[in-house]
View (cartoon, rainbow, N blue to C red):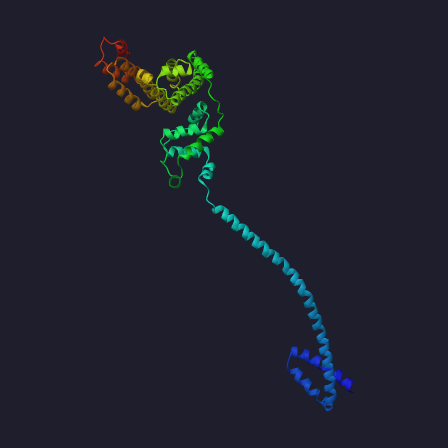
Length: 379
């Protein structure tokens, strides 16, 4: 019957497909067996066609379902694609942000902005590069006398002749740096204008001070150093070069105060560091150079004081050179030889006697310090 035959053919096709997957030869054998069915070609073909059609319909259905599934999935893909758009947008935004940052970095700062970013220490270093001999303390002292930043800055520019001397583009600084430096000092220091009565009280205390011990004398030396610096700053600011005129200005005995300060320094610095002696030498000569009448009177004494201190700190070369200069420049030598020989008595007795013996070429019993020199020689 056609129905049966159809069934068999269908099954056979299924089997054939399975067998084809496994091996080719068995499929040929089965083809030979199916020859008897060939008598009813038309019905079989029809049935096969119908079956094929139905099979195609069946295959089409899954295909449609698959298509539907694909169609359903496609919107999901589109939906999934949306975040990618967002990502793209955010990337774009980031790029824009980066570009903006880059622009801000490449923007050239003005001279004023660059100066504003400098630290006080850097400003002081640049001031040295412009050959300015200033420190934070020296600027504070000027601001104490005159708390006007602009005025102090102009004075410094004029003092060191900085106008037009440097070019900011080429050197990295110019005279405009001076006002920046003074402003930074003013902002970081407690500037209190100097009152005349305060200075007078400090000098009076110094003149009445009695030497006590190493520690107390050391503290007093620091105080007197600060007071002397204030006196010097007033003289510099007012352009005063005579101690008597300065005395009228500040209301204190300037010469007596200078003498007291030198006595204290000579006593204290014997036990302090070598660097302190060097610092004192530069400072006291700045005082005497400002007050010309005191320079003429005390320059020899100060040179001998400093020479003694260098020798006591072991710098015999510099001490001897200072004494050689003083002896060469002075006609009356007895006191100088006495000082020179006596400082070596506690350091090198043989050298002390050698110096005293040299003195006898220029000194005899007519000189005041002759007995003192003989005492060193015989000691």
